[in-house]
Amino acid sequence: MNQAMNPERHASDTQAIVVDEVFPHAPDIIWKALTSGELIGRWLMPPDGFAPVPGNRFTFQTKPAGEWDGTIRCEVLEVVPNERLSYAWKGGHESNDDGYGSKLETVVTFTLARTEEGTRLRLVHSGFVLPKNDIAYRNMGEGWKKVVERLDAVVAEEASSQTRH
Image (cartoon, rainbow, N blue to C red; front, side, top):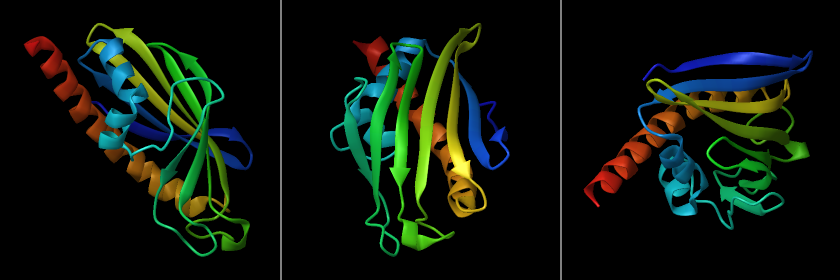
């Protein structure tokens, strides 16, 4: 895996997490892992109500903090099959100030592009307001790298099962 994570500045006070990875698989296999609720649950978290349809609202559940119940509220923003998936990612609570569980209004975008080696996945999680979201930015910066490694494993399993059938 040739993983790279670097911050991308969008405005003077917002940051994005960027993870680039090249998978030795066709875009459609990676797309399936990005858009199947059962598979998403294996590499990220089990989604509740996910469907790859613009406007669809769904949630993830994580560790609560303070006034925040741990629910991540998402809405599918863009779906271009085998190319691009984007959704809003909102969580936290105003009363949690600058620590874990501070109010977070971000966007997660997965972009797929065919390469000689297979498919390049570019994950951009944008909209972190610093310093307010500093802990989420740092934690998720490391977390997304691990998530992409798990995604790689799930995609490899899916590709293997397709060749057996």
